[in-house]
Length: 237
Ligand SMILES: [Zn+2]
Image (cartoon, rainbow, N blue to C red; front, side, top):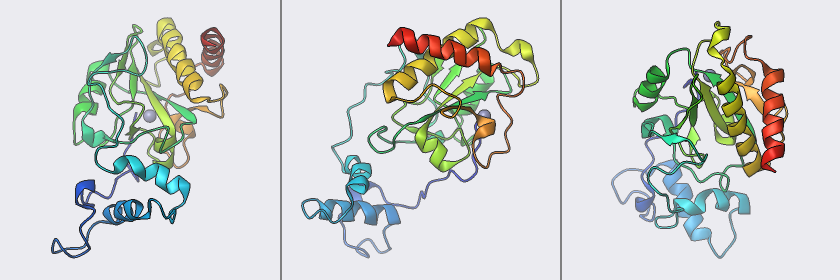
C-alpha cells in the first residue's frame, strides 16, 4: 500500500505563471520553487544553471509541457480511472526524473477500496497501477507523474508503483492471471525505460529504504514473478 510520510511538496510555492514578478512585488516572498523557475528562465542562454537542473525545470515554464490526452494510458489494455491530483505530483518523466525501479505493492483491501482511497484527496498516497485478482489492470496516474506510493521521495521520483489487489497474509490473493498480467506490465515498463529485469530494479515496497511497510509479503512468489517478467520481456523485445 502507498504511504505518505516524507513525500509532501512545498505547496506554498507560487504557480509558475507568477514566477517572473520580482520578489516582494506581490506583498510576500515567492516560494523557493518560484525563485528557481524564475532563475531558470533568466539563465536560458547564459547557461548559468547546470544542464541537469534546466532539464528538470524547462517544462514548468508555461506552455512548454508535453501535450497530454485525457484518459490516455501508458500500458495498452489498462483502463484509466483518475486518482486525485493530491496523491501525485505532476512531472515529465523520464525527462525530469529517470525511471529505474518498479515497486510492487499489495492493497490490503479490495480493488474498490483501493480505487476509492486513491481518488480521495485526503489519502495522500496512490500508485500508478492496480492489478486485480481477475487480471484487469487499472491505471490511475500517468507514468509521467510522480505517484506517492513508496513513502520515500527519491524512490517515488524514480519508480513506477504497481498495486496488487489482496492481502499480504493471504496466499490466495495472488492469482495466476494476476501474476501473468502484472509481469507483462512490469516487463513493458522495463522495456520502455531500459530498466534491468532483476531484483535490484524490480523491488517490493518492503525494500524501499526507510519504509515500515511489509508488502508484498512472504506469499508473493518472487521467483515465479521474475521468471514471468523475464519471459514477457524477451517476448516484447
Ligand atoms: Zn505498499
